[in-house]
Image 1 (tube, rainbow, N blue to C red):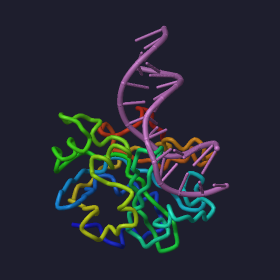
Image 2 (image 1 turned 90 degrees about the horizontal axis):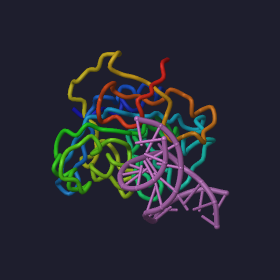
Image 3 (image 1 turned 90 degrees about the vertical axis):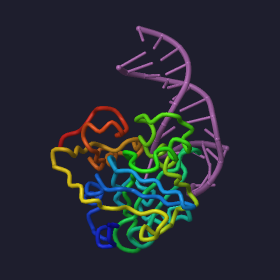
Length: 204
DNA sequence: GAGTAGATCCTCT
DNA sequence: GAGGATCTACTCA
């Protein structure tokens, strides 16, 4: 079943990021359906988080979806070529977001391979935020879409992870964020080959 | 295996 | 006009 508004509309974005692990991300564009299990996320804690686009209450046309209602997609282009997919959480006006960093492909693998220009399934297909967006067909034009619609949404298929299957570390690629770059806001499923980054992990 | 550079373009200053 | 929540390929060891 689809995740409810109550799931997204909570104060603790870090907890939501952790709970999104193991859920199924579904995209359904032009009747083409692809799905994947979320294996890596990062939390971005709104205006108090230097790594967030909304740090200090920054509000522009680009990050406007972050201030939108809970359960909205925030997608933007990074480094001129990568589309990054975020889930907006909490109430209207509070720009919390969870970045989906990696998926394990489930349905529509052939379509994902075609979108990526690959012939064979390998671990690089949906590993890393830029790659997964491309494989799922996610583009900036979908930024601001609600996750209660039919085009993009997240499902719970009943899978439950043990605590010892989940690891935390500092976030990737946010060295510019000062001490906030050190926060253990990245979560991933241990030993999953689709998780991006290096082997290093940080203990709580 | 580890480190580095280049790709590439929208957004904000 | 500069730089960015990245990825890949290539170098060197």
